[in-house]
Image (cartoon, rainbow, N blue to C red; front, side, top):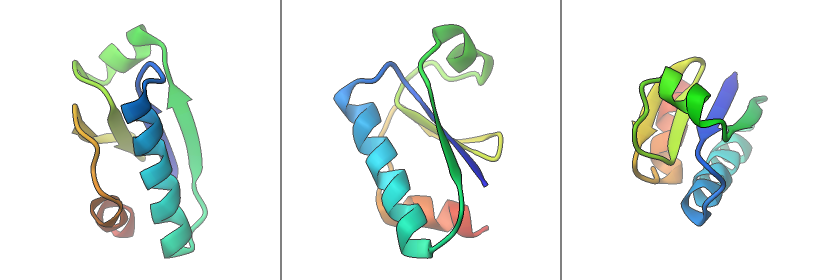
Amino acid sequence: MKIEILGTGCPKCKTLEANARSAIAELGIKADIAKITDIGKIVEYGVMSTPAIVINGEVKASGRIPEVDEIKKWMSK
């Protein structure tokens, strides 16, 4: 599973990354997490508001910090 955290490194982006790492740990799955800070790459996903989370190439949320349980649901599908 590939997880991408889109954002410039702000505190909200760091919280989103921490939530994603918690979800991975709680599910006991293997996943690669990449931080995307390049604005051009973020815009390529169609994201205009950060932070955002992308799971396996699909934008799941942008402009907010999803809770761990919500991220776990996305990872379980």
